[in-house]
Length: 291
Image 1 (tube, rainbow, N blue to C red):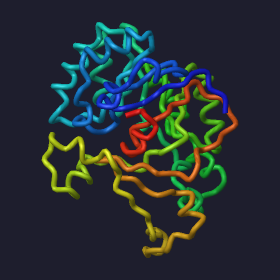
Image 2 (cartoon, helix red, strand yellow):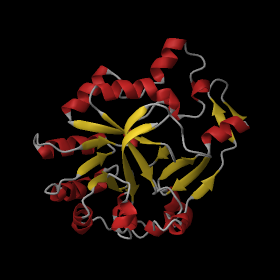
Image 3 (tube, rainbow, N blue to C red):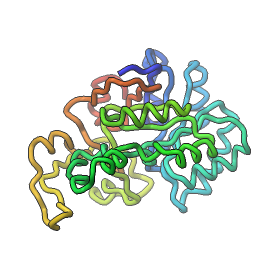
Image 4 (cartoon, one colour):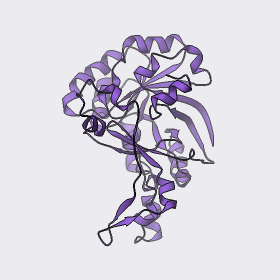
């Protein structure tokens, strides 16, 4: 795989512990979370100023914003726009709100992984599509943004980049999207498996909302044993090849990621390779001196 740039993705609480030397080899950093506003604690103007003083490009990842937090966070986003930051957005409501806020001015906008997906992101996509003909399989295997209508929407909302959990099967889709002038930020570890409004970790530990950030520093590990077969409405044991493809599921708050045995390998070119340390246990980050 060839990439022009490298980006480090991390929580605000991880960023404040970094030193400038820790960012050697990275072209940019992205601070934030794809799905939890409570993990955004510590993201202040001082954090943004510190990154800019180091001379590194900074993007802020805005989590999915539900009604409860939408107005507050739109005000916060607007207060940061005097800085030259990019925004990673994970829901269409926030995308629309930011687009109106910018009034046509230029700002790097990236669609996050909650909005970019393909059936190939599912380990048993062949089983899901087994009753479909070849043409249908090929179409459903494309990225959801790989069509003229979605490209037009990206242009209308001035989206200049997308985040993608990479797969060898996505080569054609990614090539076509990049040909339209959309940059691709690729992830090869810890692909997103699911995002929910309710927090699994908070419920499991019976925590207090808003005082819960420490609860998901270490993941809850899950190993699926069975899956539902839609064709005969039954549970089927997951074989070892599929378990290996799926990986262990790691629960970090309201986000579940797949922990793969090794990073995904692809041969095609992308624009930015993203190293995401948010889905690494804090104890392991301390060993690596990143936290």
